[in-house]
Structure formats: C-alpha cells, structure tokens
Image (cartoon, rainbow, N blue to C red; front, top):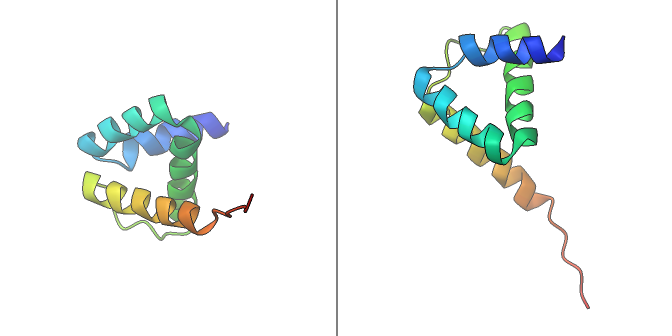
Length: 78
C-alpha cells in the first residue's frame, strides 16, 4: 500500500525534471527518496501542498534534509 502511494506521489506531485532528479536520488540513496515521498504524501494529506513540486523546490527540500543531518552529527574525541 505504501509503495502504491509513493508511486502515485511520484507521478502526480512532481514535474518532469523533479522526477528525473528523484530517480537519480533513488538509485544512490533509496532511503532519502522514500523520506521525500513520504513527506510529500503527508503534506498532501494535510493540504499543505500548493501544487506540483518543481526541481528548484526539490533542491531546496534536499538542502533542508542535509542541514538536519549536519546538526545531528556528533563528534567523538580519541
């Protein structure tokens, strides 16, 4: 069921260029791909999605994900 929702979101909520970029992400980092689609599905359910997501919006979203990862990095001293 979840995979069908992801396929629907991929086909209907992204522009052609954004889908191309997402396809590349899926090949390299499938967990990030799934996280993006799950977030978009949640946004659509909450009526927070204003239209289709273009490549620029996707890039902005990816940069937000990377910033969150950078904040969660913990350094260990040896």
